[in-house]
Amino acid sequence: MIFASWNVNSIRARLEHVRNWLTARNPDVLLLQELKAAEFPALAFQELGYESAAVTQKAYNGVAILSRLPLEVVCTTLPGDETDSHARFLEAMIGGVRVVSIYLPNGNPVGTDKFEYKLTWMDRLTRQMRIWLEDGVPTAIGGDFNVIPEDIDCDKPENWMHDALFQPETRARFRALLGMGYTDAFRALHPGEGGHFTFWDFFRRNFERNRGIRIDHFLLSPSLATRLEACEIDRTPRALEKPSDHTPILVTLAARASGQ
Image (cartoon, rainbow, N blue to C red; front, side):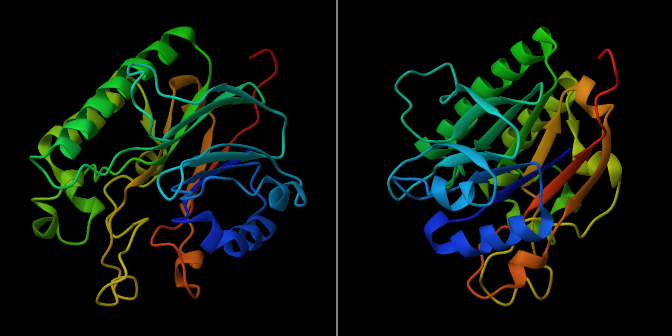
């Protein structure tokens, strides 16, 4: 199975990019983030053979899951705060795998309520991911984590020292997820390799100069990590006209063994 994730930075603006990419790459599952739309264009993907589910919010946030396989929505909000109305979380079951699309808060500027919200959201996610480990269901959490895990995950660490994505509190929470038993799919297959990014802002020709950051991730539960075969960052969509500032990340999983 091939799972992919992409922060499209407006599904309306990038609809044809996404449709063309699906046709070219044909993943079984695609997670989307930052839809920025009150309604999701499900029909446009149904025409390509994808069932979909989405959590939307007018002009902000928004996450979706597209699947060629039957999709069963489990939860549309991250547990732990009934007052949180941000569209940032979608959990579904697909082919015996729990698939979760997240758009973790950016948190900037540091020292404000936005940063506290980011850390609190990560704490809620940590509690939920611990619960998922305990139930044993194979789980893939993908999306825009808004976390730069290591220095090699950005072009120049000194440029990010004061950014919420790079703060010690942020990175420590991400490391805690790995310490709990989850696997960072890309880093597991590319240990110690720098220069691999999923986001480049639109200023100063940063994409052309590869001045980016790796903030879009797939975290796999132990039972799913044993099936990990490949993880790729596809830079092609970022080079298109009027692209998202993010690009897709893809994970290839071996078929589930008989009896598992």
